[in-house]
Image (cartoon, helix red, strand yellow):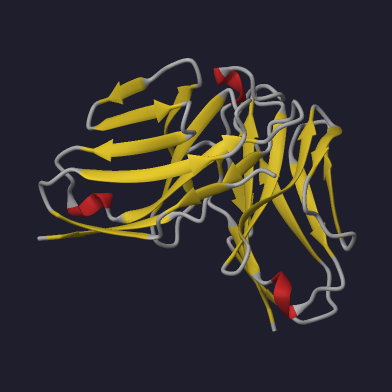
Length: 117
Length: 112
């Protein structure tokens, strides 16, 4: 158990809908990252928040948005869902933000499996 | 651009050593990581190596880094059926940010 929690574990929804995925980082971690794992794209970095502020952006669609709250939990909002958004969404957390020290090591949650029908 | 490549499949006999290979492109990567994913589960951090090291050993795991060739390998000694999983190599992306760039993953199958 990495200490990172994600809810829900599974989510089934229809095209055009909007969903919210939730992540709680490990105690003491200030950074939260979101990744998407799909069969065709593999594991792709979406976005990073550090202490409530957006830190880095990756291949995140405009239909997707995220935020990190004062208690450091994060939510990933996916809207106007398409079939191709079906994937496993991982949240990870780390103490630091830059990747230059062991405290920047990312620990992953169990993921949320999203199925869009 | 940033890219991490791994072979997709490896099959070994129980008790043998497994060697999973990875090549990466970003020479400025400070840390390189190995993660394990079991079926239906999340990513478990196995180990990491700092770029100024050539080797790191952690129980049955040995990581070798050839910085000149940008080649990373993970050796699992005395491979067990419980080691069957997908193993991902990852490097930190460039630009001073902590995004991880992952390989496609190597599926390790351990047979009796």
